[in-house]
Image (cartoon, rainbow, N blue to C red; front, side, top):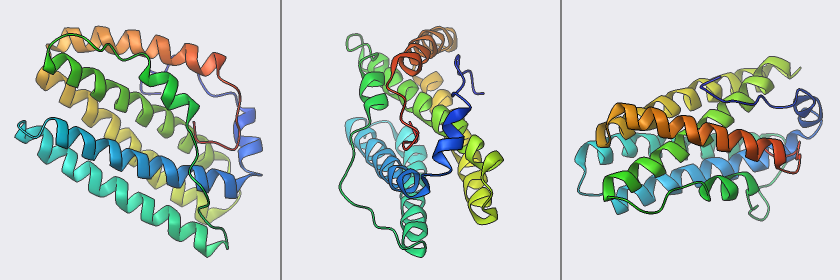
Length: 193
């Protein structure tokens, strides 16, 4: 799905479905961090109007997702609790090439955002397809569709600032690195990533 080189272990969804409170809490923090990342990119690249316009829409959507997940937590009698570290994202960020031109650095950041969206989409698809709760199935279907759209947006934005072939090659490298992270990362069924 979306170029991912390694699928999530199918056992993840079985255990995750028994840890819905933990999944919803982690999901809320993922949405909050996605909105924050978008804002950071807007601040860093405020001179790129097309980027600012598109990311502003994504940030608004990510924040509305955060609010929706918070609402779902409250509806179920759960609370957000303290923030969590995301080992997956931390390791993914280490794949970022730090050198090069400003546009190359932007491309790196956009492609890493795309990978995060792709993995979230894959996990939300598993939840949508396997949860027994009809409301949560619909909830995660909508998030799956949205994350797929964000993935496409981030990749397309990268192509506006770097040649398409260069973006494709770098995305391929990052996808291989992401698969290695998934393979080696401690398995956490109570986390989205």
